[in-house]
Image 1: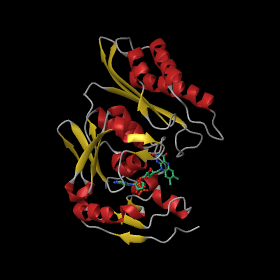
Image 2: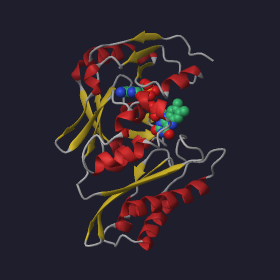
Image 3: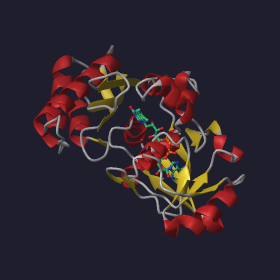
Length: 286
Ligand SMILES: Cc1cc2nc3c(=O)[nH]c(=O)nc-3n(C[C@H](O)[C@H](O)[C@H](O)COP(=O)(O)OP(=O)(O)OC[C@H]3O[C@@H](n4cnc5c(N)ncnc54)[C@H](O)[C@@H]3O)c2cc1C
């Protein structure tokens, strides 16, 4: 099947892009970034936008830079930018460890970090990163209005976010991690390149062998990725050892409200949440 008819717009500046989006938003006008999610759903006619606003010609959106304590990732930055660390320290290594789990190489050369955040698939790796690390999403609309939306307020459910129809996600700001931060990422899927059935991202620091500042987040398990406070409480102030990791995994399993589909039951996903959490913690401790 081919997409339904649409009008194509190719703005060259950010102002032009948000003005065009404001003009067409009411007719289901959509931003076209990497097209790796939007084009397939258009081809199946699951989406029939009357207008596409292609942001690939807007140079200002290709910015990828450290600014103070944050990494700023512009809307034009593709997944493949993270194949090598983009910043020294644990955050750069974390992003490089995560990116290879996203789809396949050709898709990573087109798909964008911000497109993935805006699309908000519950099993998207970048959405999990944003939720785990407390990223901020920068949304801009016509007339120069800018909103800063914290990750915990951004994801509203499956492919649903706080973005309004006329808002362009211009960048995502991810806090840098302290130099002594450890991280672990563990994802399970049935075939390489598929979306995760379940995944966990954890970070913590160690002081005299004791865990502090733990972050534990899971993705692909519930409607949206999120940090699990009960698991973080099970870790903080405890030694980095298997029994503690098992307690954190059990805490995750006890509070999640797992998704269910034709191939994967909620019971399976709950158990998977426990396992991916423990394995991510073991990775971080190694
Ligand atoms: C076979 C296959 C396997 C895949 N596997 C994975 C995977 O394992 N993990 C994963 O995370 N992803 C996976 N993807 C999706 C891929 O990562 C996409 O690149 C990503 O989801 C969307 O990014 P995009 O830049 O391609 O966005 P597009 O497809 O261009 O847009 C997606 C949606 O977001 C909106 N949008 C995009 N950018 C903005 C913006 N700046 N402001 C406002 N709205 C915006 C669009 O309007 C559209 O609704 C897979 C895709 C395919 C085809």
